[in-house]
Length: 138
Figure 1: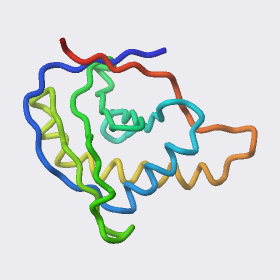
Figure 2: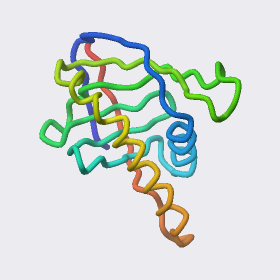
Figure 3: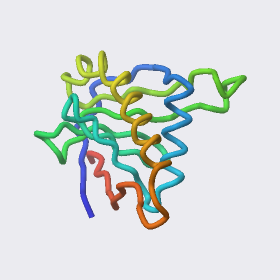
Figure 4: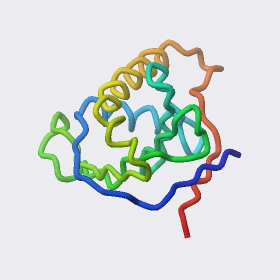
């Protein structure tokens, strides 16, 4: 079991995720056999941790600290499956504002790559998954 923690919330912003990214992320999550799915974003040295309620992002050099998360996805508000999905960008580190300028497009790229690979897996292969506990500040 891996443990991750957040710091104090520094800010919350409304954002939206392209429909294709959201749909593939949810498909990958539902295909995995564990409570969360890890998606490495190698080009930026981040890892996305997808669970049923949010996507948390950790930097490779601070692996136990969540820098920011995407949460409160609202797919029910869209009129079509092709419409973007709104969410809250919650950040716990001021570096997150700079990281967000690029990570959404990189996340899109890596979720699509993972999706393509998952369709090439044999029945004995599985997506990379782990048990995770997120520790929120008290």
